[in-house]
Image: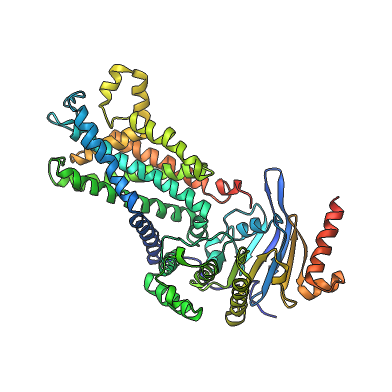
Length: 250
Length: 274
């Protein structure tokens, strides 16, 4: 047992856009040093949940805590522990890679000298040191994504959220990014919440949260979910869970 | 429970503000055509429009002027305000663009308070607009358009800051209401042009009152009129208290509206699904 609070704790979260219910009583948690996949089809509510965790939207139902800090009431304390990679590209294309880093760290109260030191170290380790002065628009899609992940690490967060980070990338770039993030979990004991609709990004040791039509259908290790559904793969388990849900709804 | 604190030091707040201003300035400098057009627009008014209308639109002696002034001199404060109005709207356009491209999220997920982040963004826009105004004044100097004493360049600065804040806050408020970049053309037609023409920028209000009392009242409630007069008086080392109060009031109103619009619980972000 440890006294440390959960890295991310989502409790009974609900959210509506007018009459449309996007999330309904969503609860799950992410522990320190774990790689958790938030798995759901397009429209499942993943991005809405992501926006609530990052305080882009305010949670009106339920509670979200990051290391015990309520995102609504202690947003500063919660967000400084959070690194975020959005689904849409958020690099400023007009600025260089290092300028993007300096801007990002300024938004966390870290000065330019420290930003450059940290940025250079991260780029060096990622094999991108020669791209520091290049404009972001000159990077490939995969490089941009990797730079965005590095940028999210600059303020040394303890939780990393990635919203469909591999969408639109080729197979190699996808594999590289997945490997990069999994290595971070091992090295830095980061808690990672990886949202995706791509089943093949899940490994048997991952924690998985299955989100479908705004509801959590399962939240456990990939192996336990397969055992509970008597299936051989997480893909089959996902199909069974969401298919059963669809039949129930019909 | 964790023992780490959530507070930032004053130095960290300053770093955040400097970072936002630095990024805005870099973007501005990278967009050379934006810099050029920001200068060309008022210069066209000054060198072509004002020269053509000099004989048609006579300006009597009205405060803060103590003697007859050339029409070019009269419209210069209006053109300074126009630069700031366009810049405020440009910032609004940039925020809509950032929102569509996702850059806005980088700003909004910062752990600093939302009001501070938006304030920093606002100040960044003001800094860029002041840079443009002084570039314009530098060129205008060669056409003998200058304050009565060099001190005027300094006394106009607070007025420019306040007017810039007002236009920036207005732009921020508008950006929350504009759902798509394509809708921005409407801002030109329904905000910039009416504000500019229904003001004291091009003609003294007593002339407007003579021809249309209704338009005169519209001009009087137009925030742009008060920004122009605030700048006009400050350029002549004087204060127009009415305009100062009006600009301060409008700035507060627009800023409060922008804060509500960008509040995670109430604003435009909540209306978008995803």
